[in-house]
Image (tube, rainbow, N blue to C red):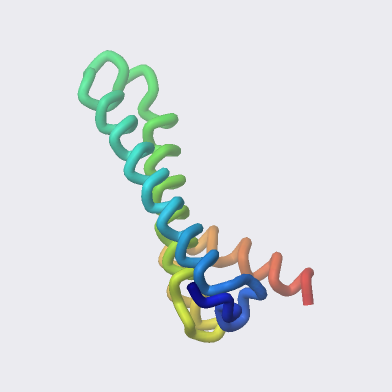
Length: 98
């Protein structure tokens, strides 16, 4: 097991990978839940916005997992996030932390 820090993260690479894997597993669980809920037309009609929120959460989790897995500089990692609002929030938080 390596304890080297993930470049630019300040956490060990092993931990970053483990966290990324956990996020992916949580994402699968949420996606399955959304699919189950969406497969019932009555539930889908009543809770469309909530089901769409689950989808946005799963996309964000996968983007964060990609950031954790990457060895690119932090700015490049954030630039790779396709969810504009998430990328914007990350940039703002990074700027406040600097």
